[in-house]
Image (tube, rainbow, N blue to C red; front, side, top):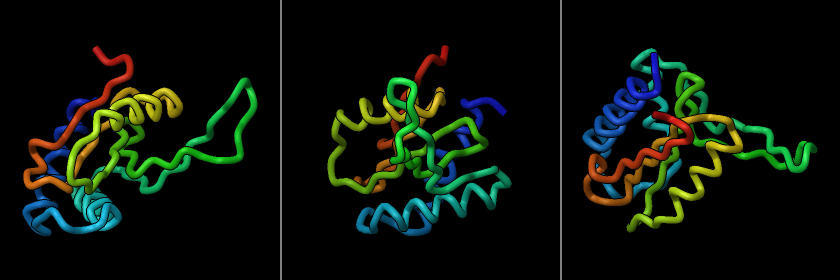
Length: 127
C-alpha cells in the first residue's frame, strides 16, 4: 500500500473519531489514542509514540524524536488539538520527515470545529 492510500485511510479514521467523540475540547492524547484504535481496527500496522534516533554530525543523540503515530512504516501522523493552526507546524513536520527519513506526514488538528478542513499533508520528496 502506498502513502497516498494510507493517508486516505488515516483521514477516514480521523473523521470517524470526530464523529464518535465530537469536538473540539479533548486533549491531544485522547484523540491520538482514538485514532490509533480506529486505525488498528482497520487492520493497519500502527506504532504509537514511536521513537526515532536523531544524529548530529555523525553522532547519535541521546534524545529521541517521538512521532505520535507511524502507520505501515510509511506515513507519520501528528495529532494536534489547538484552537488555531500555526504555519510553524508544517516546518516542524518537515523536519520530522527529514530526521525520520519518511516521505509523508499528516497533521490532523482536532482543535477546530471541522477535522476534514484541518488535515494538512507535509511531503518530503514525494511526486
